[in-house]
Structures are given as structure tokens and as C-alpha cells.
Image (cartoon, rainbow, N blue to C red; front, top):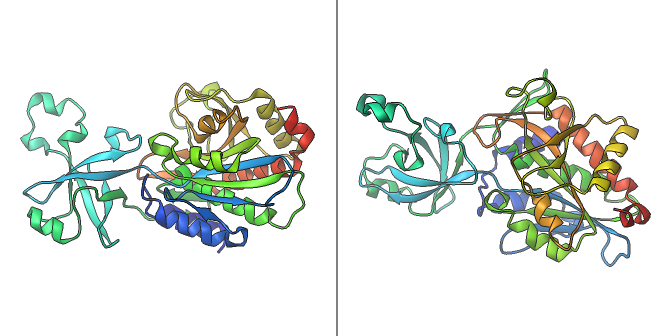
Amino acid sequence: MNTIEQIKVLSDMFGPSGFEDKVAAFVAEQLKDYAPEKDSMRNVRVEKEKDSDKPRVMLDAHMDEVGAIVQAVMPSGAMRFLPIGGWSMSSFPSSSFSICTKDGNLVKAVVAAKPPHFMNESERNRLPAVSDMILDCGTTSKEETEALGIGIGSPAVPDVACTFDEARGLFYGKAFDDRIGVAAMIDILQTLKDEDLPCNILGSFSTQEEVGERGVRINSRNLRPDVAICFEGCPADDTFQQGCMIQTALKKGPMLRHIDRSMITNWRFQKFALETAHANNIPVQEAVRSGGGTNGASINMQEGVPAIVIGVPVRYIHSHHCWCSLEDYQNAVKLGLALCRSLTPEIIAEL
């Protein structure tokens, strides 16, 4: 499977936080030469050189995406729901979702809010809350909805198919946070499989990042890294910010983040990553963020392991309608490969 097809397949896969089974199975199949391990959370772990004395460099990407979960089925057949992960409430109304039934089938549903015809003045002038919205799959009774295999606890994800515009090198779809990082790690691990490296490469494909960086704690505890590199789909800001405040633009290279609300990046590792990018003519962007958070923070808290974040810019992240660039993806892979090939024991000891 080539890179473009792999990214499209990963984007289209069903896998909100807590329901990453299909993504985990795909990752394990792509990396079967590594003899991957899975746990009950469906985290996937691989190790290049078992029982090696080389320093341990963990690559991490999370497999889950934002979604929703059915909270109750109403007598009308419509459903109350809760978000899974960090959504903007403005992204919900009139959006289409796929609900996974008990048999694993997908049923289309739309998020509906009260039509303006039935709103009073105060309702018209405020953004509806999730409690004001419903999921509607076109049924007319609770019994009809339940007969489809939908009930309390049924998960849902945005209903959109990934496409690739070859002329412009752009992907359009959902779940690039963080399936674009998952794809990058698969490419890197496949490329490095038979190379002699100065470090031992560990692969962490983690679950439930969108609800509190949960799965990576298990992977980090099991893999015991000395340093870590997180691959993320990160929010692009080039359609909202101006001038010097644009730090994550499409087609300007992957982003290396100095700080966010969850982690201050180890400046020595960050400096080494930036120098490695420049030495290899890989375009990169630098960002200082007042919000956001990544698995890097949880890894960093694991006995102070230095971690950096390589982010592929994604426009309109945590929504149905996202753009990301093949060019940025390829440069993120190049940077990941360059770092894995140059992280010697001496360099790691100084981080």
C-alpha cells in the first residue's frame, strides 16, 4: 500500500477514543515484521532490537479521533449524545455522523438542533449546547433505533470520506489528528527495519489521547524510553492568524512546538531537532502555544523523559472538514528518519 492510500485508509477508519480496535489491527498488520504487542486498551507497541543495550528512542502517535457516544434513545427514535474529545460546539449542528451498531455496522445520522421556526429570541442569539442537540438516524421510534443495533454507549465518528487532490498535494477528510502521525510512524518504522542505527527504536501507537493522554502512559511504562518523539496532527493557524503570529501554516513544513499548556519542551532536544532539520534542508516551523496538549507531556512526566513534538499542520482540526498537505507529511517523515539516524548515545546523554 502506498503512502497516499495508507493515509486515506487511516483517515476513513472508525476509531474514536476507547474504540480504536480497527486502527490497532491495521497498524499491527502493517508492522507484522516487528512482532507487535497489543494490550486490552488496544495500544500497540513494537521494538526494533529486543534486548539491546542501545539508548531507547520511542516514537509515538495516537490512534484515536474525536467522536461522540449515545447517552440515551428518546421515544421519537432520536438520541441524546455526549462528545468524545474536544469539540467546538459550532462544529456539531447539521453535521453528519456514522454510528457503530452492536454488530459493527455503520448507520448514518445527523446532528440536529431546534429549527429557527421554533426558537424564542434568546435561543436564536446563542450557540446551542450539546444538551440542546440530538442525533437523528431517520427512525420514528425508540424501538426502530434499537432494532438497528443502536443504544446507550454506541460510539460515533464524523461521516466523511478522505480524498486526495493530486494536483495540489492536499488531503481532505477527518481524523488527521492523529492518523497522519500514525501513517508517518508506519513509514518511518518500515524504512528503518533493517538499518543499523545508533539507538534502539521503539514504536508506541497509543489510545485515548483525546480524553486525557491515557494510553501512552501504558506504552511508556512498558517501553521505558530514554527520549521520545511524538508525531501529531497539529492545528494550522494560517487562516486565523496574521503575520508573525502564523506558526503552523500549510506547506511550510512540520511544526516543532516549544511550549503548550501541558509541556515545556526540553530545549536541548528541541535545539538538536531544529539543527538536524536545517542540516538536512528540511523546512520546519516553530510554535509557542498558549493552549493544547499532546502525549509528549505524559511521556515527559515518565521519569523526566525528554520529548519533542513533530506536528503536521492540519486546518480545522477536531471537525469533519480538515485539510493537510502531503508535502508537510513527507517532511515530517524525513525529519523523523534523520533524528533516528543521528541520536547517538553521546547526544542522548546530554539531553
